[in-house]
Image 1 (cartoon, chains in turn brown, orange):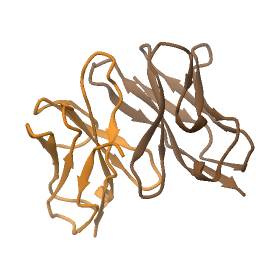
Image 2 (tube, one colour):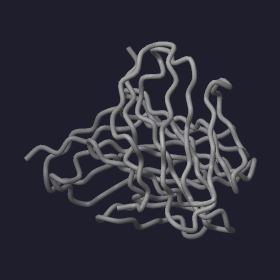
Image 3 (cartoon, helix red, strand yellow):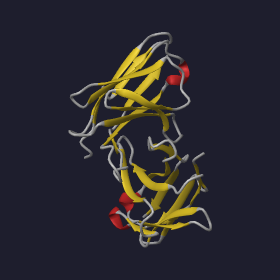
Image 4 (cartoon, chains in turn green, purple):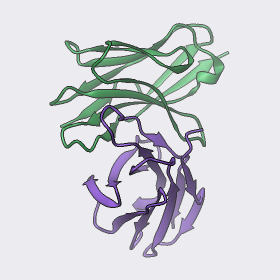
Length: 115
Length: 114
């Protein structure tokens, strides 16, 4: 079975400081992993995805994530937070077992950026 | 913009009623999935349609049903609405080809059941 655990429900950082959002996954198969961002009253936007290529994945808006199989982790980082980064972030694993590629979402991490 | 649209944006229904939510996928996307996002939670997979047939379902009862049409539009129907059905409903579309796993989400329909 596929699942993800987001270790922090809320993260608060100052503008210009690094961002770390933590995610651990569980998968019986080689997983596909994603990070999505959800701004208030807007749809989910894909930040980046890992699909068994390079373990360090670069995404949009300066975000990146590293797939660590030994730690079953896929943490999201950004060197310097901007006010516009304040949003809800979801770590997601794809169900490749059935071939349907259904997505399993974590419970989300709300990022607050302090001016 | 993902090219996926949903209607209506907001909807209020009463318990026991039926509701139909609509989604228009990106042109060429042959797969559409529906998700329910309760307040403060991550989205949960309801079901997926591929070439107009359901080919995957999450832990949702049969009163949740769907349709997919050849013109890249789709519907989510919920019968006998319950208070717990109040949520944001998201559709996502993709092209089901090798390596094409990225799903593109619409902005959602917020349903309130009173």
